[in-house]
Length: 366
Ligand code: GDP
Ligand code: ZN
Image (cartoon, rainbow, N blue to C red; front, side, top):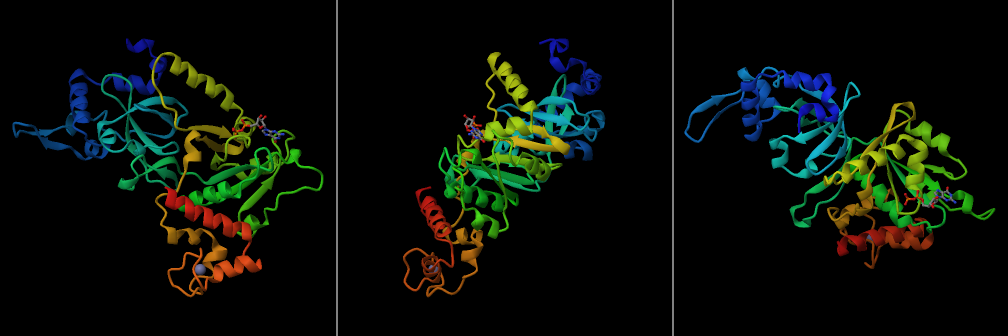
């Protein structure tokens, strides 16, 4: 495709890439195919070809070898990542060979990315910064113990549940709480559809409040609780998680009005016959915040969690550590279990204990 037909053709950063001399382009292309990283480019890459001849690349590549441009990954597709650059430009960057050699999961929405102008035209995603936090699910091959990172660098995981329609499922809330804890992300529970509750009816969420989880009750339909949510998400990177039908899409649309337009843009791309798997997208919210929409988030299971680790995420159970008759007690049917006794006496909330047992069961199924 001629370069001027491409949408980003007028981008000043890209024309910098086009200004590379012909010979430099060839060398850069070879270099990328060899799987060298941006660090190699900067430090002076040397390697031997099949004939044993040493090659030095970096002196010939000052333009490509630069620092690159910093950005944030806003969506991950099969062959490219959409990256918003620090100057606000949005580019499609192909994975550099070095990145492609490793797992696809290497790149996640929310990752701090470095891009370089690709040899010839377009952009290459050349580097990924360290992750502050991660939201992950087990990879397709459970045996290799490699997780797929669904979203990186989240500050807050908004766990959306419905007061009713669908029925409130503590089990889902607990699973997402654990996923957040595992990834180092602060959880926030938004109980939606409170407009549907009968007068006087309420969902008891004190177990979560007791655990220090922020809880906001509201209704997207009536507009309740949204201001509080906006404030809590201001300036932070958040994602929505929750069972289908609880109102995530509705919430996304009110928190990030640009979401509607963006969905259209994605379809347009698909219409051209390009197969793009949109794994997640990142939207702007009030106060400089970001919101990640992750379709795959419901699959967040916890195969990787060892059964004896589950209690670490139930502080009220963990507190009784060492008081059961058996040191390795899983608090199921073991004799002399103080946790089960505490659940029976009400000292531990029975619904939380039930949730603990279900998660433990879930691990076995996985
Ligand atoms: P998602 O599957 O989690 O994305 O849920 P949706 O946003 O698609 O919402 C599912 C249904 O619940 C839709 O019909 C929404 O109109 C409805 N809904 C969302 N929020 C509320 C709310 O606060 N109150 C009521 N009554 N309905 C809601
Ligand atoms: Zn026990």
